[in-house]
Length: 395
Image (tube, rainbow, N blue to C red; front, side, top):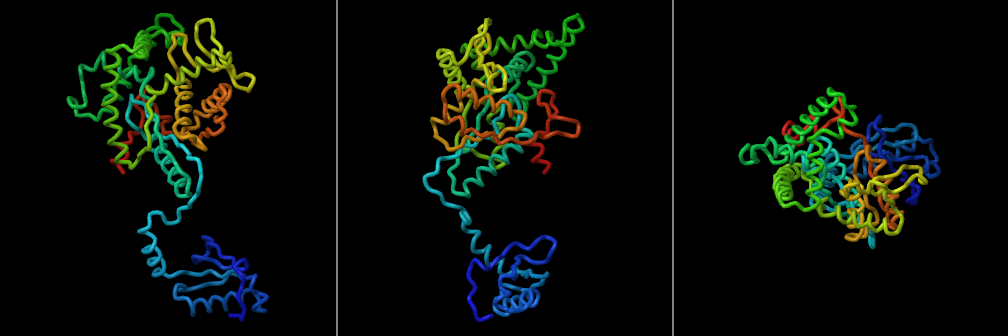
């Protein structure tokens, strides 16, 4: 146009701002020395030149020193026809990159997936896809919380009031059937607390002394001791739940490279705790419970094993973190978990560091806000949740 070949660094192209008409905008100020004209005249000359020489440009407009170009629909049709068959279009390629392990979903086997899980699943899956598109190897993992006091609550309620109900006899999805007994446990638990308080017991004491809760704790102890009957019931009810989960995951399009189960990892955490005791990194209280003192780090003392020897969430997370490190040696170990667990992951990293795990710095908590209904926070034990299956059915 002006008898000169502009260098690439002279050409500035950007997306047209939303308030203006156009697809792309060229900044014309660098061309003024070539045109020897004012910005608006230069922009109009370049616009007319492109209109005549490039069939892809259908129109243009000028805003001061900025040339806004409109690209033809035919161009976009040709572009997308070319790139759509390539499912790797735009993907980056990186070499010698350690994998990123991303944990998401992490359901409990005492209830169906709900709205909170939907958000978590989509966030975890999306982050994984973005990292993959940038050439980073990703391992998508799920930790199923398949043991613990919350699982025993559903089991105990089914024992007491289930009358041998199964998904087959009731026509319910297995996860929903088990979830109903979790709600039933909480209902009966609150009744017992009220009775104890009415008889003069303080509320905090009543919460810990309710007979049905003590039964659930006893069941958990039997589970950890390997009681055959308890383990058989636990296995059967969990199978019902897994079948229900699979239906929901498949409909949602969510998958994982590996699924971990808390029942298979919590003993690894116990072993780490025992090792910490032997090295005097952890300490035991008079009642036999095991703790980690984090007060020098600005936190508090953290329980790692109860007085009866049963484990807590932190115990199994220690074991699972070690297992994932051994499995993948990841550059990052990302947990997609709501912000109510911020403190938990601060503690997890600190405890691992105290246990000599230098890789603990690779742990990252991808935190996000909680999903709340207009009437308040969802509570599975009270049945105040938006069921994932129902939500997808409505959508």
